[in-house]
Length: 536
Ligand SMILES: Cc1cc2nc3c(=O)[nH]c(=O)nc-3n(C[C@H](O)[C@H](O)[C@H](O)COP(=O)(O)OP(=O)(O)OC[C@H]3O[C@@H](n4cnc5c(N)ncnc54)[C@H](O)[C@@H]3O)c2cc1C
Image 1 (spheres, rainbow, N blue to C red):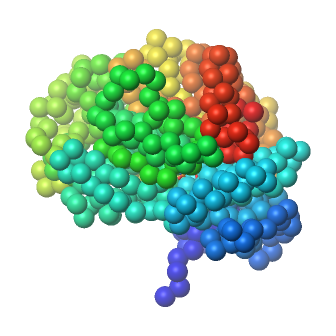
Image 2: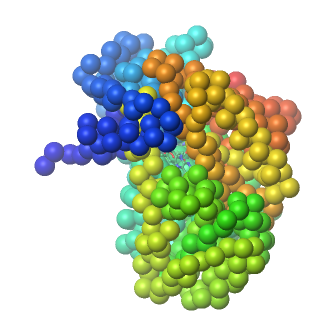
Image 3: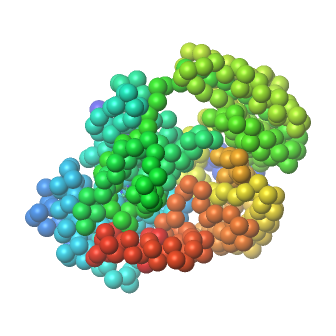
């Protein structure tokens, strides 16, 4: 059997990339949506034809048993999966390839990599699944003080090492992907229940390093909430926190590791909170004529103490694009889950709140007590199908020269109306200027809190061949400025990386930047770990 291969320039499995006919059909659909002529599908790059820069350095004997400069691996470790990474990859540009890839099989081998990099002044870039959408895994740009760079791939450390059923926690290695850790936990009857959209390929270490957000709309939204303790190898020694349900002993070491984006150390394992698989589920799709009324309903549910597992509001454009509703309605997808109790009362109360704001639920709630998904049909089913298809769709659109990307944020409820308006105006204006025509902007709430939502925006616009990166950068800049000027964050869960650095620098307090620099200098004196990320 031929092993399944990954698309080396785009998202996911190579065999999921649409054929010529599929791309032509997509071109027609996109053109109808954007009011343009259908673009011609462009030829995909070929792995054998990629011209890589010669490596500045080769693996030394001490690292060679687990390191390689093989072109295919240098290529797959060059970029993450941001829109601009896909465009560069599709153009065959892998000019920032690491000089070699090290894949340590133990902490001892990892310590050897960090020791050698510190001694030689070589940049070490931690690499989990490489699904970063903020340029978090690419080497420093040309002209930096690092002439050589090694990608440190955690993929060989992918085991669930221990399960504590009494405290409901598991010790898991950082390189385990979502499916790898869930399969191993299932053997013990547990689940981590952390499902980012990139679940299939991203890793526990990457989630912790970026403070990833899972599917859960309320309560345990970020991986932060599931982490009990973290083990990280730094050039200055092992950083291991104690397993505790909670602690008031000073600033938490885990809080510094969470979101450290590979600059303080390499996370090798973590104890995480697990739970039995849910048995009871309840879900419903609620339709609203006005988006503002739907926002009010979501706020009331977020403040009700009901804590739905899903509370995803789709604006009319988002509902249309995902084939959930095509009549201009906004749609709220609600779901509750429990391993312990039936949820009729919870979904009933949430629907009563929604109906008090004008929402209707024509199909009624779906209730199950057999552990199966409640929402595999209707609005929830349509949404689920297109949610997992979306990254493949973006990759296919890039091959048609169409700009398609997302950005996300969070703000307090009092600021949301102004933010939403400002983002709409800024993005549409930037698309008009950069692309010379109208584009599409859609919004959904991925997470909601009692004090505010996390809005997630998708934009689609016609690209000009060869100018897509500049056009995209102009729209991204306009969107980011709007977020910051309205008091929102530059990212709710996508992290900072190289892409968000200018706005992150404005968002954080200056003394905190000093503290972060001092922390890095203490644990990474040679400054080799992911240079340029979060701080200079
Ligand atoms: C299609 C798509 C959907 C996505 N959906 C979501 C989503 O729903 N929620 C969400 O939060 N994000 C999402 N992302 C972004 C991305 O998947 C997350 O940031 C994820 O946490 C990255 O994990 P990774 O293992 O791929 O890390 P990588 O991309 O390999 O690395 C990300 C960063 O973490 C550092 N890092 C990785 N592993 C370690 C380690 N062991 N120790 C120290 N540093 C490390 C890297 O140096 C880099 O800075 C999505 C991305 C894509 C492409």
